[in-house]
Amino acid sequence: MTCRAQYDRSPLEGGSRSAGPVEAAFSRRRPRGISPGMEIRVGEVVVHYVEHGTGRPVLVLHGASVDHREAEACFEPVFDGVAGLRRIYPDLPGMGRTIAPETLCSADDVVDTLLDFADQVIGGTAYLLIGHSAGAYYAQAMAARRPAQVGGLALVCPLLPGLRDVPEHRVVAGSGESR
Image 1 (cartoon, rainbow, N blue to C red):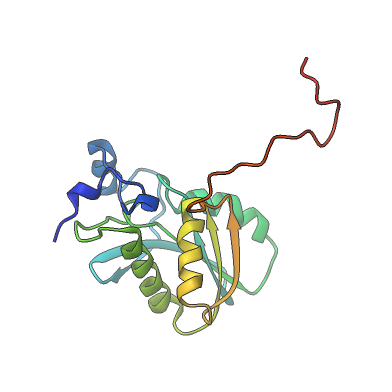
Image 2 (cartoon, helix red, strand yellow):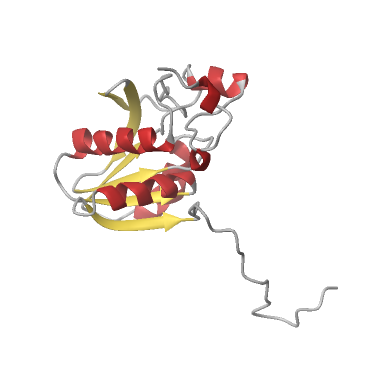
């Protein structure tokens, strides 16, 4: 089964890959400047990832249309000097060096792939899970499906399905008058 009709949908709408020919081409070849890292086959997906440190596993998921370097650049300075954490940064399917096969048809398929990735790379050990933006969307789903394996969950700027009401803007410092 292929899912070309799903290319134009975001992960929240049931799609899991970029639609455009440029994005598709980039997802099939190694972008310049990406560290070699490691790869592991998860079903039909070969997931590229990098690791830093040793100890308790911390799985960090990046946002949409970037690769592991986005999350790595954000979080490694925070972890600098913190011992005992094995930080794992995968490229999400269809991004960076992780090519999304035609059979990956939905956000649920991506979550399945990420759960299988965690099983293979981390094993049965409970892990901490951090997600940024679209990565937070997937992290929420992973934690909901396997709460016993996720020892902690941090969501940074998460995509929240169904949330459309934004609180009224209010000034918390200053006069509130525009100049």
